[in-house]
Length: 125
Image 1 (cartoon, rainbow, N blue to C red):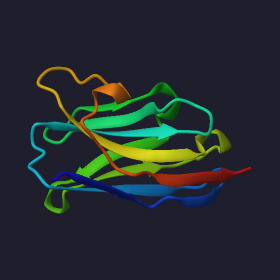
Image 2: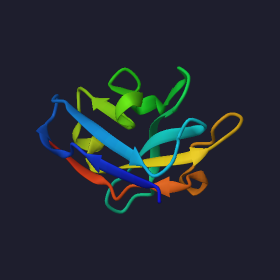
Image 3: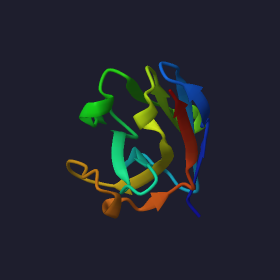
Image 4: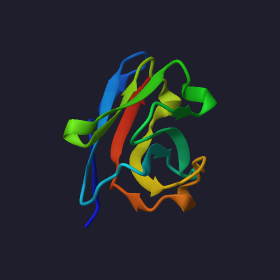
């Protein structure tokens, strides 16, 4: 059974940093892509950052480029999202997701196969 468990959320002041973790278990994720999504109150879930479990390709939405970095630790089966220069508008529940793509990944929430339960990030002004 696939499990994705997020951690690392919390309350931080604007300009601060947080590192989110997503521990993955239940299968071999070599052919999977791993993504971070977020959902603010009253908003749709949106893509933030993603990467293949194998390889160096990384994908970011424009409004986090230069501030957020996605990475992984294969030995720990864990994907990270380092978030710097946080803004109040980054406040949301952040979710980890996984999907199998043979070609170019499609970072649409509807195309993800597995989800974690999310971790809340609150950025105060």
